[in-house]
Image 1: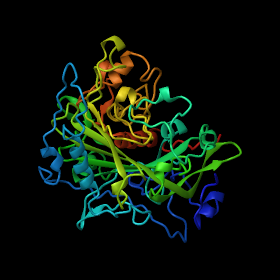
Image 2: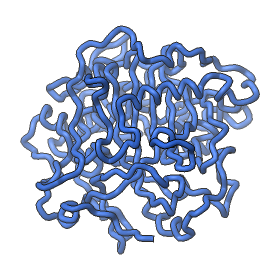
Image 3: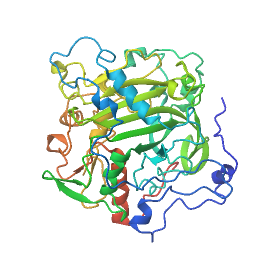
Image 4: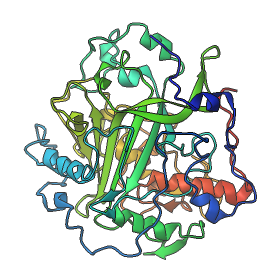
Length: 476
């Protein structure tokens, strides 16, 4: 297996630091300039690949109803039942159709193969449909790169994407297979320490764009208002009709994860691996990443959290001729199942029912904590909604500190492994503008499940306090 990153044209200069614009924003720039920067650094002279431009011409108003949000008219049952019903309502409960209708909306006007060029199109039918969250190009380590506007997210490891053939008992999903034909036997050993980098880009439709256009106006400074007695960003909660989509890429090679065969290969200006030290470094270079996961989320007033999340995995074994045909639906989630361990003691736990998982998944997929929904490169100890439900920001432009002034979104001691007050709060159902459960972090501003907006508030807090981003320390 060739473990060297694939570099493209002028990208070889980027990797050696020749002719590279500084990855650290100038200290003299204003909040408005920094909030709406396209990327951490622009493409170098002579670059011939795709170039990302932040979509931030946010609409001031939207129609009172989203006519194309046909899933909102579908008859689905959000009610919790005790005891939980037998069987899986994926098909019988219309959840498969619900998720399909969302994807049909997302892929309107898009390239059938979703290739590196043109990538994701923000205009549909001549009108701008899709918008980005500002302030995500301030962090030099993880901020937006110039090709597709992706940001660095959780590093996945072999156990996330490769079945544990020597320990099948550790597979959480009842649908996961234990062998992947064609997998290199050396792959897990090579990547066990360094993992696979995940770079992802997210978009909101007009309803969502209007909301965070009010939350972070042209001044670049977040605006906070009183909503039903709670301090929260202007424009929130997100209105009915909001749709979010996120595309996640991985540098996992096909001989590690054969079901990625045929996945679109995007040029991503991401971290270079120091092979000798077995560490990713702060140096960025344009390298290939493959589309591995597509997440969607929609507001739905019928849901106990106001949201429905869904996720897809790319599966080269799926029949069809387009990228979209090869997206395998994994399931949907509309609540975090607060009656299920570890939100409840094991002796009182009931099976999760606010996640509905596709029973026909044949590729390896770990899912989330105790059969809650999670995607291939997500944390198997968490779940889509419990992670996003912890989306809060500190007040008054303070520096964000997970577990201190906002909930720990991604990890904490005992996550998913023991019943505790923290797990009970983390896997509770929060309906915005409710505060985080259990009386914890009472001053934190609810962000209505938006971790992208949390990233924006986090970077603004860094700028507001120190007037400089956190320096990249990768590889140290």
